[in-house]
Amino acid sequence: MSNSRPSIDDKRKTFRKLHEAGCFVIPNPWNVGSARYLQGLGFKALATTSSGHAHSQGCADGTQSRDAVLAHYRELAEAIDVPLNADFENGFADEPDGVAENVTLCIAAGIAGLSVEDSPNNATTPLYDFSLSVARVKAARAAIDRAGADVVFTARAEGFIRGLPDLDGVLRRLKAYAAAGADCLYAPGIKTREQIEAVVKAVAPKPVNFLNSGAFGFTVNDIAAMGVRRISVGGSLARVAMHAFIKTATEIAKAGKFDGFAGLITNQELNKFFAEDRKKFSS
Image 1 (cartoon, rainbow, N blue to C red):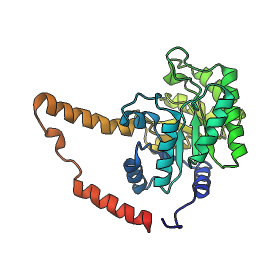
Image 2: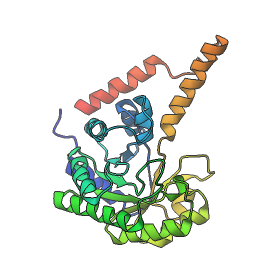
Image 3: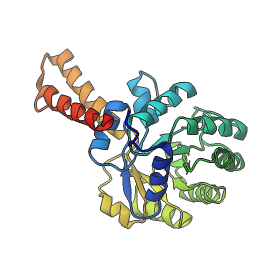
């Protein structure tokens, strides 16, 4: 490998700077191939997707082990030259001490940023209690500071995607997380202009990540005009791939037709891209 590739510290500095001004899209690959292709398209940073990777491994979202997820982060971080943000789910722990321990391990995987959710991701409890959620944010912040790593820490308020779409409650949590040391704030599931602008205003001047996981009708310029700093797409790109696969395979199985293969990118085109990409990677 060439020494000209950016170091982990370089990528962390780049990621931090991206959050200082403007608006950027941080798409979510689910494996090395999709990550390298997104990098080739010129995206300035990438983020993992827990659902996209889990489904590619035959798992439901939120059911993979911490160590499997950390290995995935390490593989992606080593494969790309742009910063990688980790969707670190709930930190793989309920109590603050466990969150801190696991955040330390996540940092060691070579990521430039990470997010932690305020939901235990189970069928009985949508969200952690408010005070526990704030303590978890403080623990993650302290772990990053102890590591001396300039990792961008994003705190997530999960209410809108956990069956509690209460904007006031989400704003209360986001404000508290910002005060507890989060660098970036994120409320997945909001989708209207009014909701987005309310979140941006509530935590200003700290940056906000907006999840554009559906056809909401907004362009990048529209979202930037609302004050959003970072736009992610979650598992949507992975679902695009899985949707096309399922639709085409089902048509073969049920109707004996291969129409889904029409207009596909060719094997030669992909070979050309990855061969040239590999040369850049090793030069």
